[in-house]
Amino acid sequence: MGSVASYSTDRLDRNLLRYAMRLPTLSVEEETGLTRAWSTERDEAALQKLVSAHLRMVISQATRYRSYGLALSDLVQEGTVGLMQAAERFDPERQVRFSTYAIWWIRAAIQDYVLRNWSVVRVGTTHAEKRLFFNLRRLRAKIAQSGVGTLNPEQAAILARELNVSLDVIENIDSRLSARDCSVNEPFGESGDGEWQDMLADERATPEEQVTADLDSQTRSRWLAAAMSELPDREQIIIRKRHLAENGATLEDLSHELGVSKERVRQLEKRALGKLQAILVDRETVA
Picture 1 (cartoon, rainbow, N blue to C red):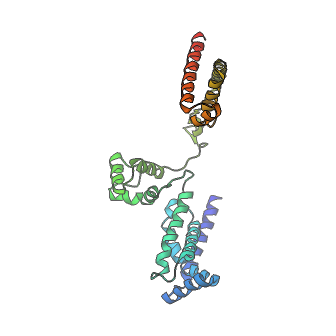
Picture 2: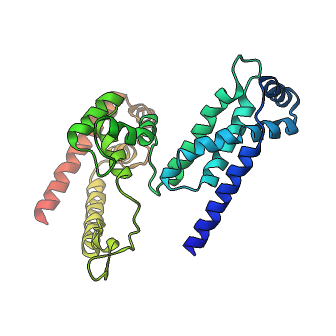
Picture 3: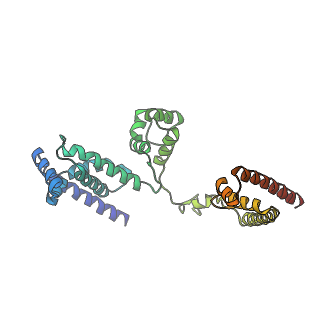
């Protein structure tokens, strides 16, 4: 099945290339006329002709990213979206060729697609990471490092200085490029009986630990409720609204409610906390 799908994809790519090569190129005057017709009159026929004439440029850019394991037809499709975005934003009154303006949009659209689909793990979320992702192979060659394996610490430090990024960014992207995605259900070992997921540690609490934690929490809640009952009413109000409510009240709020100054509320709060601490320490000592 895989070979049939690969054959179909290759045939589609060849047909796409042949189609693009047959499309005529535009003169400066024709290009200007088409961009103006679309910009001012929203002439869809002009847009279609403009996009078709630059499809060859889209394919040229797309072929540069085939090494990331994505189908050329998908890369071309994304590049065409970028081309149409360029047509939407292009100002025909600028003294610049449309192709010069559009190539940036084409490349950006293709790169975004590669970053979204190259791996199930999101990479290249910042501008520095994106730039490094697409240039690491070339930079490796620049410092006489093969494209196989990961960078050593000295080489990673060189790249970090050249690109003005942190060493963590270099190491993260380099490790991602040096390894492929792997299913946690993929077997390993000589017999193939085990799966990688068997090696993952479960950091959740064990049932025994969870039961113990729940019992401890219930005990602390009972102790706190009992300790609170020993406080005067005003101090209970202050502690509940300042420390036990989801959105703690301010000293000013409580001063208005209780009819005392903010300083008096602070004094009552401090005294109440001291009492609670003493009561709870005594209970824990007895327990």
